[in-house]
Image 1 (cartoon, rainbow, N blue to C red):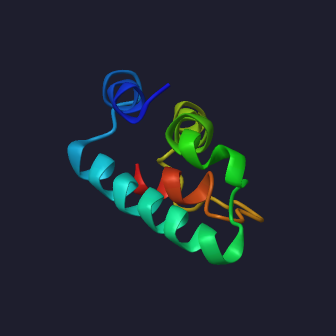
Image 2: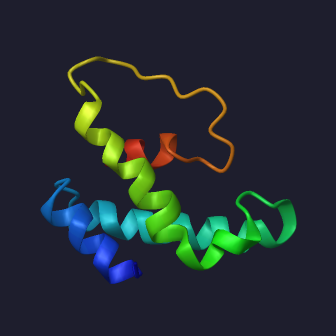
Image 3: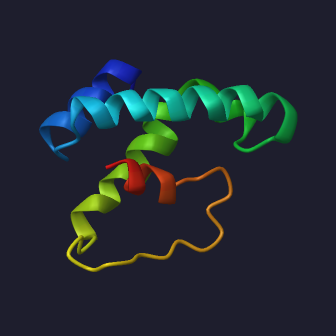
Amino acid sequence: MQQLEVINILKKDLNFTDQSINKLKEFTNLVLQENKKYNLISKSTENQIWARHVLDSAQLVKFVDFSCKSLADLGTGAGFPGLVIEIF
């Protein structure tokens, strides 16, 4: 699944805004850039970052009660899923 397909799912099925999508683009670019130095995600999944990491993380928004004042994500590593949910 390519980036545009994932973006369409994020918008249509999960209600991500254009602003959130732009932030996700920035985030994924940073992850890929820093992954060259720090191995944040597996090298074999870099070309699948949108489907394998972003979409997998984003689908959790269906289960989060955003009326709560806080949410904890322990050990997010490269920021998945915590930063994707925060961007939402």
